[in-house]
Amino acid sequence: MDLTSAESKATYEKIRKYVAEHNAGMKVSSLNIAQVKAKYGIIERENFNKPKSEEAKQPRCPKEKEDAIMEALKAFQMM
Picture (cartoon, one colour):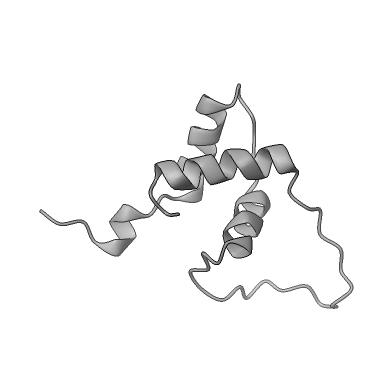
């Protein structure tokens, strides 16, 4: 039985669990995951919750969290 493209992708919750299990309970937010996915070109759909001004600041994902998320994306074969 073949997997559909939606079944082969990990949800944000699965990515969070993987990161926590493999990185001493490290917690990552949806924003962190979205930033890493956007950085590497994994964009699934347009974001409709955009900031009202272009100058709105968002916190950036720390390097150690980015590395942990990348590890999870590779484990789920999304990279």
